[in-house]
Image (cartoon, rainbow, N blue to C red; front, side, top):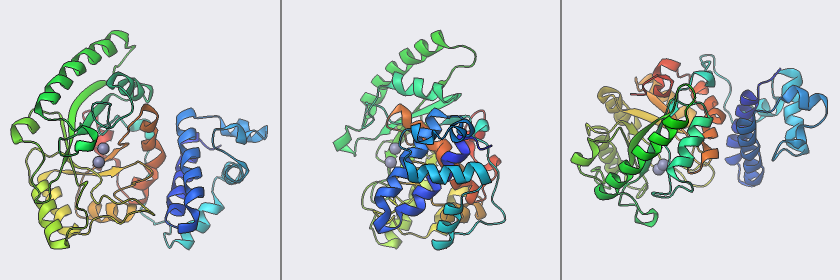
Length: 336
Ligand SMILES: [Zn+2]
Ligand SMILES: [Zn+2]
């Protein structure tokens, strides 16, 4: 028997490995899309396999159905094993076991206040559908002008809407409701300063500082920039720490060891951004950060409610990095 979530992770890892091969981009996207459908719909795979109906799952054609059939009948994917070998990424002895059922909440998501494609209420309902206890609403800061980033004034307006949405959620909640956390994904400027003043950052529930522009800075300058960001007392998390896009864009290069050490010292968590286009930190980099004592968050960076399912899909990233549950803040009842 194979759970849909476990199968989603296998397809997600296949998509990740294929993405790094120029000629396989299209297939990579197909695997990621099928993985998302599995994570969202959670179909009964054994039942579908018995009735030869795996292709009834959205995005699952004959090729992906063959991979699923192999997984369902043997508990392993020979295709994934071959790909790992080919990409020189063997299974390691210290991989951890992580169960999505223990994951409590996602702290990185966007709404139509910046570049998200859904309202705050729709996103909150999406988080509730996932069974989360909390969700961070972390729209962009002003510097990202193309997406209408939030300044102090708009953050105040957003907090009023958040109070309204929270009321509506509580009124319709059965059992434990989902708590909205007001946050920001604040840009790390070229010199490592942040794109909002301290007085604004300190009143927010979640501050994710992310590098978005000028990722090709000289490593020394980039190191100084990232060191300054992880030393800001208001920063909780470094979002997608390299800015890479597997198969499309190299991430920033800096003295990772120095920055990760400083993050560990200051209690700043590093993100594994589970968006299939990012998957940043990579398992290899996350492993380095683990060895240096860092905490992690596993986030979807969702721009639409369905994208919350990026986290269950990408749980394999943390497992392959050998990160224990205790070091992942989203597994805590209060993430911070
Ligand atoms: Zn970002
Ligand atoms: Zn984001």
